[in-house]
Each structure stands twice: as structure tokens, then as C-alpha cells.
Image (tube, rainbow over all chains, first blue to last red; front, side, top):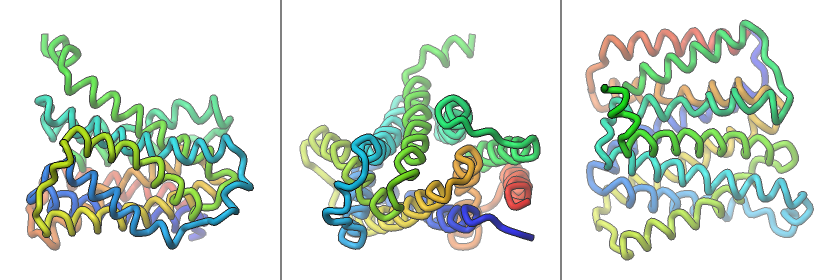
Length: 138
Length: 144
């Protein structure tokens, strides 16, 4: 079976974030979700010296730098919105699977913005993944 | 009636906001990754998260709980999230299909459920077993 390069990178993401899901549970046993998010950003900062690009960062286009910065801000804002949803009376068993459907936004935007298309078999895979994410989060 | 109540509920709109933010995060990650290498993407991503963390700190009037266990778990969370983010940027940087990479990476609750069962000795529910089967099917399809 030939695995495309993106697959192995994604497997590492899956394992890392899978452990994060577990640690999230453990950390919120001791501190609030907001504090957990703040300390999570501190954890991000621990890695910064390893990824420091130096002056090379100015070689990239302004728009791409903006996308990278905005991706961080949107990720954190999304986490904040999730916490508020839970605090505002949303049941975790409903809010978690609903918010796990964020790939739908990407699937809707990709053909328009990036002009990418996927095969029917891959569509079946995406649907399968979305069903799995919802069932696993319930 | 239940639908009307749900649409009026505050939590519902915050959930929608969360979906839109995370959808936007994935899209912008892809857009930036077309040119910028994964390490620099992760570096800039972290800078992007800082204003939200500061906003939260201000909202809490700089008061944080002092549980060393909770703090350690949360910092480790950040380190592992960063590693996962780095490899996600690397996956986007390969030029592969954005919808596939995003959907595959969203399957991480599968690993959480498996770890919760093996490490925390939590019981797995039948619905989660069905979820794991769908996840396995998705992974097999993506690898074809």
C-alpha cells in the first residue's frame, strides 16, 4: 500500500492531538478551561526558540505572513468560543460533536478559494471521517 | 419547538462561531503553508495566538489557579499541540488536497478515546466503537 507523504505527517498530528485531548481532560480537572488555554499558549511559546526563523521570515510575502498569524488567532478564538458555548449551558455531549464539524467549512471553501477537487472515493472518506468525529465526540 | 429554543440559545451561536473560526484557521493554515515552511508557520501561528491569550488573562484580571498539576498538563498540552500543528503545516506544505488533510487530522478524538480506554481505564460506549469503525474506514480510504 502506497502512503502519500501528507498521510504520515497527519498521523503524527493525530497522535499528538489525541494525547492533547487526554491531557486537556486531566488539566481541566485542576484548573479552569480558560486558564488551561492560557497555559497552552505558554506551551506553544516553549517551542518558539526551536522554530525561530530569524530574518528569513521577511522573505515571505506579507499576505502569507498574515495568513499564518491569523491562523493562530482564529484557532485560539475558536477555542475560546467553545469554552463560552460550554459555559452558556451547552452540553459537552452536543457542543463537542457539533464543533468537530469544522472541516465542513474547509470542504465548502476549498473549491472556491483553492480550486481543488476530490474524487468520489475521497468524498466517501471525508464523510466517513466526519461521521467518526461526531460519534467519537458524543 | 426544540429547534427554535436551540437557535435562540447562546451556546448554539458560540458553537457556530467556533466552527467558523476553526474552519478559517484550517484554510489560512493551508494558504500560508503554500509558501512558508512548517517551522516558520508554527512560529508565526504562536504569535497569532498571543493576543487571545492576553485578552483571556485581562478578562480574568490576571488571576489564574495555582495547581502545579493542572499547569503542567496544560503546558505539555501546548508543546504537543505545537508538534501536531507543525506536522499539520507540513502536510499542507506537501501540496496535498486540503479537504483530505483537514478531515483526516480532525480524526484525533479517535486516539483520545483509545488512550482514555487504555490509560484512564474509561469504558468505551457502543457509539464510540461505531465511531472508531468509521474512522478506520476513513483512514483506509485516504491511504488508497
